[in-house]
Length: 246
Image (cartoon, rainbow, N blue to C red; front, side, top):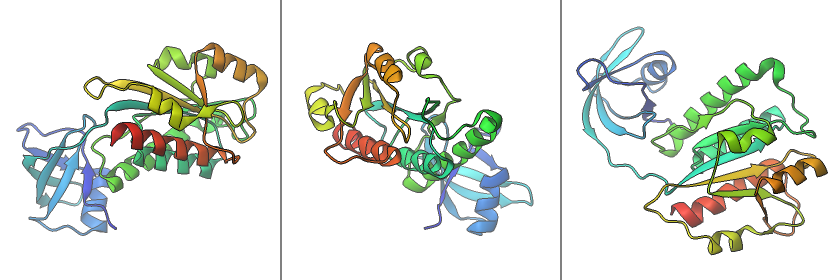
C-alpha cells in the first residue's frame, strides 16, 4: 500500500504551513500524484502527528496547510536495540522490522566475530539505515523515527545508552525472556528504558560475553531452537513490544 504519511522537519513562519522538499515532496507529487486539496498525515521528530491538506504543488516543493493535530499512541518504554554488525541485507532487515516494532534507538555494535566491517563506508551505511527507518515508520503508522546511532564499541554502550533494564540474548544460559518480562515491574506512567543486545552471526567471544555480564546485562533466551541473529532480534523485540507496549 502506498503511504499517505509524510515526515517534515518543521513549520514555516506561520506555524500552520509545512513545506515538503526532496524525497518527501517527490513521493507526494510524483509517486502518489497528490493533487491540490488532497488530505495526508504529517509527522515530525517529536512524535507530533497532523492532518494536513495539500495547498500548492511546485516543481521543487509541496506546500501543505495544517488542519488539526491527531492524537497518537506513544510507547510506555524507551527501547534501544544494540545489534552486532551483520551482513548488509540482514542489517537492513533488522532496522526495518525493529522500527515497526517500536524501538527508539538503533545502535550498531562492532563484534570480534562480525562478518561485516563498515569502517570505510559507515556514513553511507548510517544514511541508508536512516532512510530505511523513515520508510518503515511511515508505513507502520509511527509518529517518531528511531535514532540511528554511529557504531559504538561494546565497552562504551553503557556510557551512551544507560538503561533501567538490560538484556542480552544468549543461546544456552539465558532464562526464558517471557519469565524475565513477567517478573519485572514496568510503570507505564514513567518512561522506563530497556536495552537489548544481540550478537553477530558467529556469536560473542568468551571475552565479550564476560564483559557483557560484568556490565550487568541479564542473559535471556527465546526457546530451544538456535535462531539467526536477525531472527532473534526481531523475535525479542516483538515479545517486549507485546508485553510492555500493548
